[in-house]
Image (tube, rainbow, N blue to C red; front, side, top):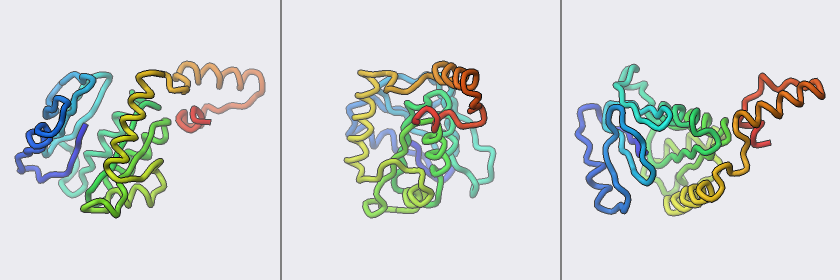
Length: 195
C-alpha cells in the first residue's frame, strides 16, 4: 500500500507514474477490493483506507481536513490482522502522521521503518517517528526497500517467523497463570510475543 497526503480536490496521478517504473501491478485502492499478493495499491485523495481480513475498504475521512491522519488509520487497521507480520514504513512528509501507526505495528510485534531524515525531501514525518522512539530501523529508501524484501522473503520461507500465534501465546500465558500464579492478561501481546 502506498499512502500519501494530497489535497482532497487534487486528482492523483501517482498510480500512473509509479506503474511506469514498477514491475508489480499497480492500481488505485477502491471500495471492497480484495488484496492480491504481489500487487501495489495506492490510496486516492480525500479517503481513508482500511484493511480487514484480505480486503480493502475505502471511506471518506470523518475528521476535519487539518486533523486527518490517513497513514495512522491504515497502519492501525493493518496491525490487527497482520500482527507480527506487519511492516510499516514512513518516508518523506510533513507533520507526524504515521507515528501512532508505527507504534501500533511495533506494539503487535511488527517492524517499524523510517526514512533517514537527511535523505528525505520533507523530514517531518520520519523525524517525528524517530523522536517518538517507535522506529526499529532508519535508512535511505534503497536500504528500506531491501529490508522490506528481506522480511517478505523470510516470511515466505518461514510463515511463523518464530512468532507465536495468538492461540499459542494465549496457551502459554494460561499455563504460566495456572502453574506459577503469574497473570499476564493486562499486558500487550506484541511485547510479550517478542520476549
